[in-house]
Length: 510
Image (cartoon, rainbow, N blue to C red; front, side):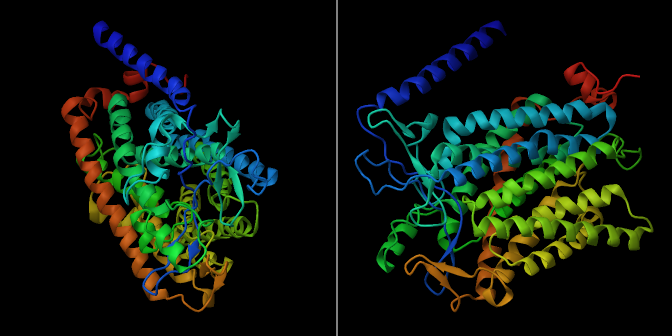
């Protein structure tokens, strides 16, 4: 065992040394800035509506006076948005999940969330960002940004920048790296709610590393990567830049802040895990009620606040689209809370705090892909529908599936994500108050080429692709971890609780 530890430490030292040395190796030749940013729709052939993912502009020589300079207001907004997403995960998601489990497993959920966030941020900066957001193929990016190499150019003493929705408007690439890193981290953390209270800590970490590498990164690249709007001047340059994009981006999938990339992707991984790992000991025979609705309410509230950074921050500018995403996040979430609570009140006879918190999260999930594309009334409808549909998802659909999805990851994030992704295609239509298609050739919104039926079909393809991709990767990853490490704790440890048996500590002391 000591020999293995020494080998791991030696390997880590070599990796760290390589990471420190990489920028030095590149000092004589500035690396091209080829990574990408999110989201906008753009004029395309009649068969497609293209979701734009803008790319960092190549670092320019100091003498190039025309080079775009980041606006301090946009940069500050993106920093605040990134901090808000961090708060969504730790402590928001951690407390939301922690309150929903039994008291003997409270700390296990908190530590899993905390560690997943930390591990994914490290991996994101080592290789994740490069694979997701640099030019390569239709499914994976390249390696230009390994160890975040090339963002700082010591020869010209310049930092590279990342483009936004608008031509010539940029933000520092480092803040874009950080912002997107928090998305990767919360996506991986969402999964654990499906198999809470019964999985080995080391197995959780091993699975997350595999799934992050082979599911999150390619899906993010497929949906969000594009080389940017600044190179588009005419139909020829539009076609040339579109050909470099991710596979689903080329097909015109609209996902403003992560309906497919985050919620559906994570929910499928969670559902597969719940099925493959099996039900908790005593499930259906013993009480497994949440131990602290107070903690869950606090966590849900933090999620709601943090989600403004998640959605409005995805505009990448402190402008009109950010404001649209902001009001949609406020309105849809409130509407979903109302519809879930009243639906539960009617069907079960009493409204519950758990219903209120669950409804809020359902609304946040459903509006995520649509936030910057639909008008406020479209957001209202999406919120109202998501509350009712996700209420069915955690009750009727859950019974039909028969899996022990402990914290209803699929019922809320999967069902809500699918609903929101499909309805984005409906309510993004200009005739329904949506943004329609932005034509980067003429640099203005085109209101006469949007097809609701065509866009909904494109959205359905994106949903189906994400479901299949995540499911296949998840099955393989769970199986590998089970063969090498073993997924599940022994029955006696599960009965005693993971706080004591896995971590040697308790959340509460009498």
